[in-house]
Amino acid sequence: MRALSGKCWLAGQCWLAGAGWLVLGELNGDYPLPMTRVLSGVQPSGVLHVGNYLGAVKQWAATQAESDAFYCVVDLHALTLDIAPDDLRSRTLETAIGLIAAGLDPDVCTLFVQSHVPEHTELAWLLECTASYGELKRMTQFKDKGAGQESVRASLLTYPVLMAADILLYDADEVPVGDDQRQHIELTRDLAARFNGRYGETFVVPEAAIPKVAARVMDLQNPEKKMSKSTGTPAGTIAITDSADEIVKKVRRSVTDAETDVRYDVASKPGVSNLLEMLSAATGDDPYVLASRYTSYGPLKNDVADALVALLAPVRERINELTADPGEVTAALEKGADKAQAVASVTLRRAREAMGLTQRRIS
Image (cartoon, rainbow, N blue to C red; front, side, top):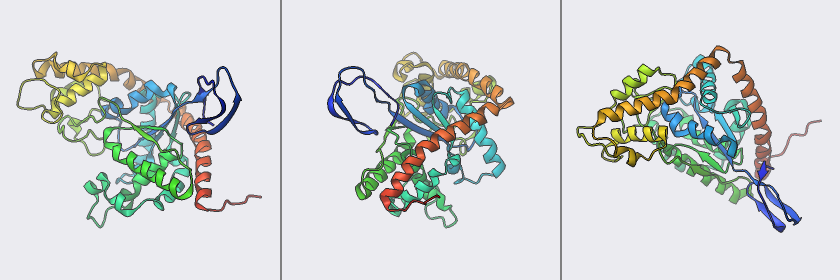
C-alpha cells in the first residue's frame, strides 16, 4: 500500500484510490489517506535544455515531496534514435546528473534508469498484445518520422507502448508531461482501460499533469517547432550547461516577427509568446501581464536572458560538482532501481496472472 496521510472519520469500508478496499471499522481520529503517485521520464538523447527544465524538471523538483514520485532516465527510448553505445552510456549519466543538479533529491523521490528495471520491457510486450496496429500508426511521432519508410525502426512504431508500460508499472495517478506528450497519455489510458476490461481490474488509469506555462518551450530560431535535444537548431536550443554569454547571445538572436508590439498570442506571434512563456516560468508572473510591461522586443529579450542566466547558474554549478565526482549519482541510481523494481515486480506479476501466464516455480 502507498504512503498515506490525512484524516478519516468513516466506519465500515473506505476506498483508497490505487490501494484497494481498506476495512476501517469504527474510526474516529487521524487516519492516513493515499498520496498521489506520479511518474515521468526524460530521454538521454542529449544535454537537458531549458525546455526540459522549465516545462518539466523545475516542477518535478518543486513538488517531489508532495507525492510518491518516480522519475526515470528512459534510455530504452533513446534506442529509437541512431545513437552510439558510448554516447548512450555517457548521456544517461549526464542526464541523471542534470536531474539531480536541477533539484531532484534521490532521498525524496525515486530516481532510476529505465533499463535497470527489466519489468519495463516485459510489461511492454504484454501491452503490445493489447494495443492495435491502427492506433499506433496514428501516433504523431510515427506519422511524422516513420510512416511510409520501409527502413524505419520498428521501435518507432511501438515505443508509445513502452511508454505506457513505464507509467502503468508504478500505478501512477498523474504523469507530469509537456503538452506534446498528451497523445501518449491518452494511449496509455486507453490501453489500461482495455486491459482492465478484458482481464479484470489490473492497472490504475492515469491522468496527464501538464504545466500551465512553458508546457512546450519552442526552438528560439524556429518557434513553431519544439526545442529539442536531438533535432533542434544549435542556436535555438539553450542547454542547462550553457554559459551566461551563450544564453544571452541565443536569446538576443531569437526569432520574433516583423511587428514591434509585444503581446502574448501563440497563434500569430509564436516567437514573442515563447519568450513570454519562458519569462513567466522563470518569474512566476502571468505571460499576459508580462506582455503589458513591454513596448519593444529588445527589453523583453534582455529580461528573458537575465532571468534564465540567474535561474540556471546554480544548476550549472551543481552539474560541474557532480560531474567531477559522479559516485554519488551512480549510487543514487542503484538505490532508485531497487526501489522501483520492488514496485514494478508486483504490478507485472498482477498483469501476468490476469493474462493467464504461469509463474515459474523456484525450488
